[in-house]
Length: 365
Ligand SMILES: *[C@@H]1O[C@H](CO)[C@@H](O)[C@H](O)[C@H]1NC(C)=O
Ligand SMILES: *[C@@H]1O[C@H](CO)[C@@H](O)[C@H](O)[C@H]1NC(C)=O
Ligand SMILES: *[C@@H]1O[C@H](CO)[C@@H](O)[C@H](O)[C@H]1NC(C)=O
Ligand SMILES: *[C@@H]1O[C@H](CO)[C@@H](O)[C@H](O)[C@H]1NC(C)=O
Image (cartoon, rainbow, N blue to C red):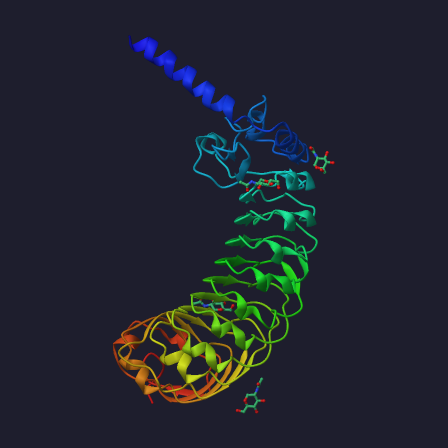
């Protein structure tokens, strides 16, 4: 009885899968994609055999009703048991074949953290209109970001970080109206941040650090109501901080460190109670530090070191609720270090190399 039920189930399952087999053209495209890559340690591509690419091909998934391939999800860092036995993270060489673009119903393309996948991003990727996730981070991909990337109107995540990508950020990027997460960090990008970057209304994280970007931070950024995390550190940005950034409702992490920015710090940026991580270190910021802290100030990190700030340390800092890591070293500050609980756990390194600061934890005044 139990066994006949088992065979009935098996029969049903095979009928269902026969109803939605992998289309031969898509299987051919996957095999061409596989042929351009070499993964020597895990053998993930050994599973890519047989006719039905929708069943048991590692990282491949299909739409259960149409049978079209929708996901190619290959991550070099994974909890998968296959990786446990390797005892190291994944490694893969080769390049991303343009035949991947024959999978015209693809919603997810992830080839991430394989360390050595090289070559360029095929330009035809910009014609995969159904793509929602494009993650090629953590490889050695070079060349430019496809000019028409902005055609991918369904894209919510674009992650190309930790590669060797050069050229400019294509202007069309600002047309990605559904984009929530943009990571282009640690590449070789040059040129400016598109002036109408603020068109990316759904964006919550923008990571552009460790490139060679020039120009200033576009004012339009402040129009992105959902932006919580903006990291443009370690670039060659100049100009001053747009005053509007201080008025952003959900911005909680702002990293501008390691650029050539100048001018004052808008007081709204420091009085904004949502701000939790603010790193302005290693720039040319000047003027006094606005005395606008209060009971709502809660900073995990406030790093203003290696700038040209002058005047006194604002007394209101001692009223702040939390000051995890404060660094005011290497400026031109002078006067008495305020007393108060936020200062009690800080050591001399937070205040060193100023013009004439005194008081605990430095020498008495
Ligand atoms: C991909 O599509 C192109 C254009 O339709 C075709 O010439 C090529 O043979 C296809 N590649 C595979 C591997 O099916
Ligand atoms: C799948 O791709 C084909 C060819 O581009 C297209 O005609 C069809 O509408 C797509 N189906 C879905 C469910 O997106
Ligand atoms: C702030 O940025 C500087 C320069 O990039 C870096 O050295 C420092 O560690 C950062 N501060 C914190 C607290 O992360
Ligand atoms: C620092 O500020 C002083 C005036 O306060 C100015 O003379 C000097 O040029 C500034 N230095 C830098 C590196 O911006």
